[in-house]
Image 1 (tube, rainbow, N blue to C red):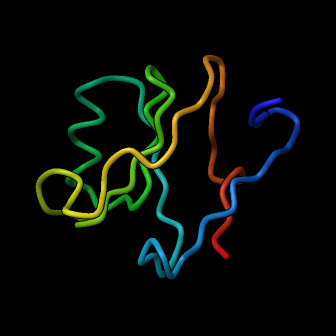
Image 2 (image 1 turned 90 degrees about the horizontal axis):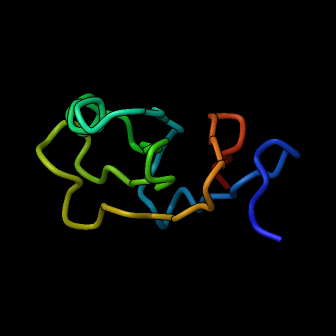
Length: 88
């Protein structure tokens, strides 16, 4: 089976590999909110419409950064929240 957030599954993220010092997560529902999230400093952004987790590698700069972008794709119906993510 795939990832099941409702069952308490946790996505383990390698903090060193992703250059993350802490978990800064934001979940968005619209294209406008997604564009805004790119500039607000969230390191991880979950797009609820497309079920995509993005890595924002350049923090508040434009776009996702050179090493950022799509980090994971999830099945329809998955709703990630911060407690489903853990830095290791």
